[in-house]
Image (cartoon, rainbow, N blue to C red; front, side):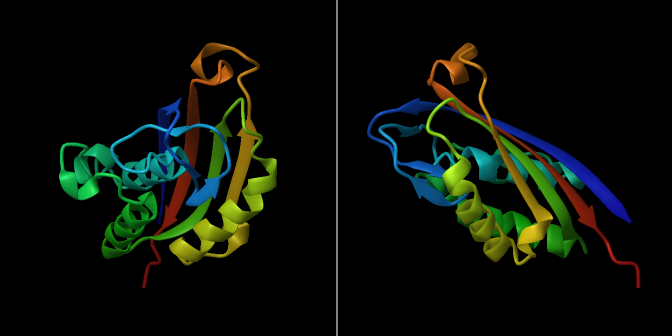
Length: 160
């Protein structure tokens, strides 16, 4: 049996924050603002994982009102989300993502991000697709005020 989920996230960019995307620190003058490390890509993947099994969203499981998650690494949240998925008897079949960012350019970092996600999710790197897009200088992303991410996750339940 297969289940599919769609995830989306957006965070504002600001000074005095690290830019963490897909668990990788990316050198840039600004970082993403959020309660956790604001890793927009991992947040979209988690929402897609939860969506596939109708388990709510990231805020349901890791609320920004809980100090336990203040400045936490989104990798930790991803591992907890994976455990919930595995507890339901599902594994990740594949992941497809878009990072929508005007600046910095993501292409040099995508291989490292894929490696990191594959390691943390315990899946083959070839099951993770990540593409980078710009918004052609339109809206908050195009004006370098925010970064967005979209993710689709297909889960598989092996029938015994």
